[in-house]
Image 1 (cartoon, rainbow, N blue to C red):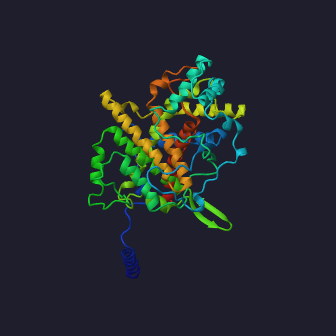
Image 2 (cartoon, one colour):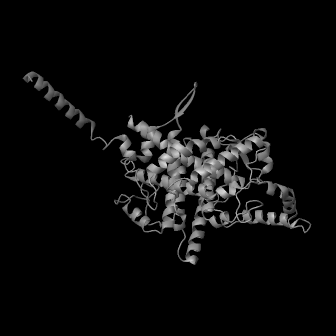
Length: 467
């Protein structure tokens, strides 16, 4: 090699080093590694790993579930978005265009859904008229058949059930309206800042069993983070019982899932030619990059996988309820309703085939009195979170927040009603365990959101890999 050529190489090398120094220190690792290198292997408090969930969800469950949720029965959800916030005086609503929700016109809702309300089995519909008349009179009429009296009592007990983890909307209220979920998708609306932080802060600080002396990492409303990088918070968290630790991880997982949806359906362009929605990589990195989140990103994503396992387990447990011959997903179109039920049963059978299910028997074990007290505390905390959703200023965020908290609450109700579900008769009303139409629609759609989040992680991995 000639001296002139050698000098040229040395000069290029020197210029490269000077350029790198001028640009400042690069972030360690690739963009993909910084978001996902820690999101692998086994999950805490579980015998399942991330890779098994990815394969099962993305290749098997997600496509089938997505198709089911496009059906008339599951796309129409009745909700009251006008309930006042029960915790603070704030009647303001987000004025941003994308925060708005477009409710269904009366002729846009299938007639069967409107008339069925909570009656979706042949057995229940036989006595529906008598039950409603008895409720209107406010007493049990002795002329009613014994079976009808039992059915009415069953629904009264269900509405006041101590196993309900959410404060459900009164679907008979004049303020309750049907919403087509496909026409009002969950996506970025521009709702952010102190008002949005106030909602999440109330959820985490007042309902996750956390003392005020322990500060949550990266809390924008905290008085000061301190210098321990969240070590005291995670030391406290690891010292909790498995139930309280799981509660925090469920809320964190739900929060992560919502942030993934906002990053995956982001308003990229808004011109007179139209709007373009798509993946915002910068937004995703801001919420999950290990460096930018000071190590919080991977914890949030792992909590998403924990939430997935909990809702998947509930799916597999509720099969006997839907498998009964008399049960219908009623919209008024008999052929389509039969097809929808077959799709649903196929999905539920598929969930039972998952090889590494979460073992819910580890919850509320030990001393029965203490376990019952802890379960009630767990239920009341979650019920409180469902009420906080009525304080969200963005109506579209409120819609999806209410639906997803009700869906998760229904999943918990299913997990803790295992014996009642197992003992249900194959025909006739199931007096011990019931699900309303709102619970069914919210449960499957909420799990659909979690399943979509897991699938979107694969999309973001590919986008980051190609940066």
